[in-house]
Image 1 (cartoon, rainbow, N blue to C red):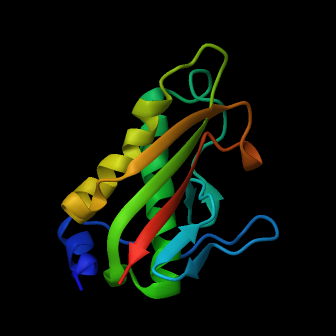
Image 2 (tube, rainbow, N blue to C red):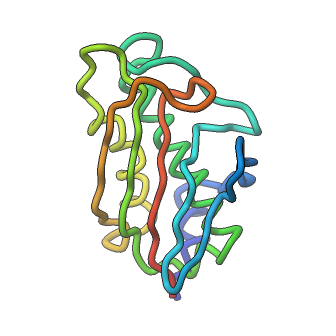
Length: 152
């Protein structure tokens, strides 16, 4: 198994405490050699880092940073369930962007998550992806990310 915790430390990153679910679900579920995370919002210490729609109250570059936070929260859920060092491959990332009317930059926003996975996991972080614009997200969050991860 790889030493992804060491790689996080090299990058100066620390996994946050797993965000508490805001409804009736668990943060992550394992089935066979895969972990599926629930959608993760940009929580920092239990509070949303921002609210609003991208392209209106939240700028695209700020939203990209929030997607990065979502990705770290998703990895925290994986770590709590099976340990991050058991990750073999980031298989699929789905990103949702609360979009103001006319905003079409969803792929660039979700790059915040995708680029983070590349930094941490290298080739094992290359993944399939969807970046979807939506009218609203839970609690008014600007971005949400969920993962499918292959584990050892």
